[in-house]
Image (cartoon, rainbow, N blue to C red; front, side, top):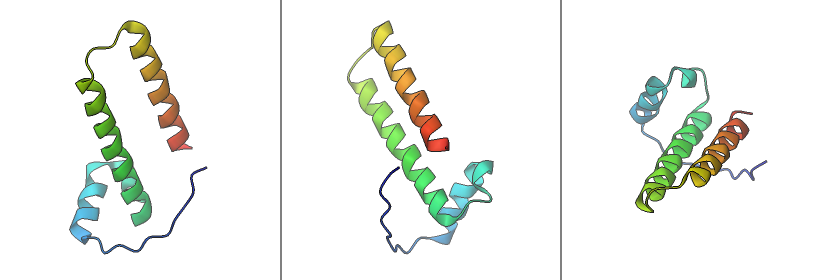
Length: 78
């Protein structure tokens, strides 16, 4: 389990609402959960962009990366 650190941030209410509106699964979640989800998605997108910049993968590398992503997604959903 990840270490949790309490952080107080002023957040734009419209930004939180828009994050909730983009994903129906976020509708009933707390602000903390919505922000954590948004950050996770952002970091995943950045990792994907970095992987693309490294060039094409061979089949074994692509399968390994897909397995890692699947396990990470399952661990995050728990």
